[in-house]
Length: 283
Image (cartoon, rainbow, N blue to C red; front, side):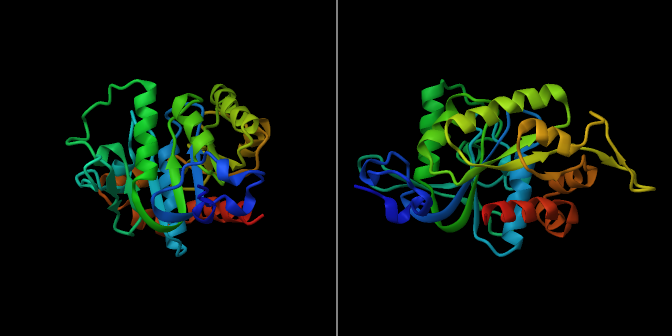
């Protein structure tokens, strides 16, 4: 049977036969918008941008959830300071059907991550691709999300199995691309852009992270990686620029102290990100 009534892509779906739609719909909740945050490589701060966007959306009054899709390198629990907590797993019947109850942050952002399901966060995942994608889709489908305005999926780097599974099986409203100001990184990120275009996935825009360091004395933006502007890099990617975000030691300090939500909520440097994101979403 079709799940059109609860699918966030229903109003935009062009499928002529919706009853045969293969998109996965969460069993325990209704989600209005599902957004993937991805990049071509690791180390660009993709999880930080996911978390910052989630916090700013929550600060605006939206109901927000985060799915940590980087199964082999989950970092969202550490970002939000909830890494000592554990998600609840409920067995529903004798056929081993289960339900995950996500962990809530201080701001009531709902988070599910493999690191919230394992006994210890340092426990490595030594799985092959099919197992990883199976666990990811189960966390998406079997989590008790409730009613959300936005579910943000922190996706693993690259164009491999997990990215392909999410693009094919999850009704994404769009993706946000994260890069850093280096030609080598931009070239790798461009692969993700081309992948998304080939799969007809809406790209909301690009974020240039680690773009600069701001001088404490004169507020000058000091660019360490490239003299090219963020707009030049976004033009190369063929995408609108959502924001350029700096290297920020205060952000790191607040993450380590478990105060990242309060810091980002008050920080103006992420306002441009959420404002441009909302403008693009409303087009």
